[in-house]
Amino acid sequence: MSGAPQGSPRHDEPEADAFTQTYWDAAARGRLLIRRCAACGRAHHYPREFCPHCWSDDVVWEAASGRATLYTWSVVHRNDPPPFRDRTPYVAAVVDLAEGPRMMTEVVECEEAELRVGMGLRATFRAAGAAAVPVFLPWRRG
Image (cartoon, rainbow, N blue to C red; front, side):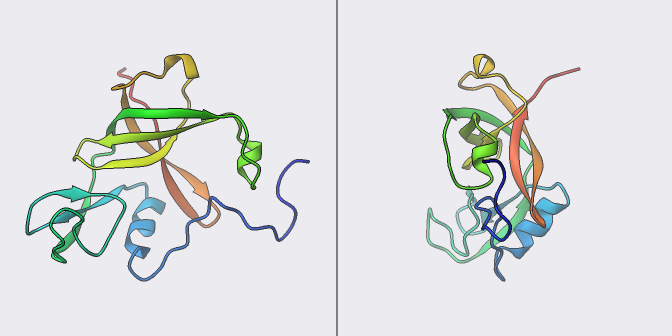
């Protein structure tokens, strides 16, 4: 069986709401946003309307550089919901953004043997229905 049957839900398409629409609009333009607290100065990701560090609601959107380092990963060999079954194996990962927050994502265009804790990564975006989601690939000079 390949692909999702017509009308089957896709589990990789984000569901934007009034608050997160800004984030998804930026992603569609190839920009990664984070939130920064004006009260304590700390950045966070995933987007929330309050600071998870000091609970202030004085937080603003900020463009992230897209640079990150690999914190940890797992190679997924089986995942049945569409469209993941057609992507296996893939690298589910947690990365540390240059701005400080840690985020869950996927590492693409990288062989499993190349993966190393602390390796440099850069954001890119993959289409997910009408939206785009951030994924990361190795940062290579040259």
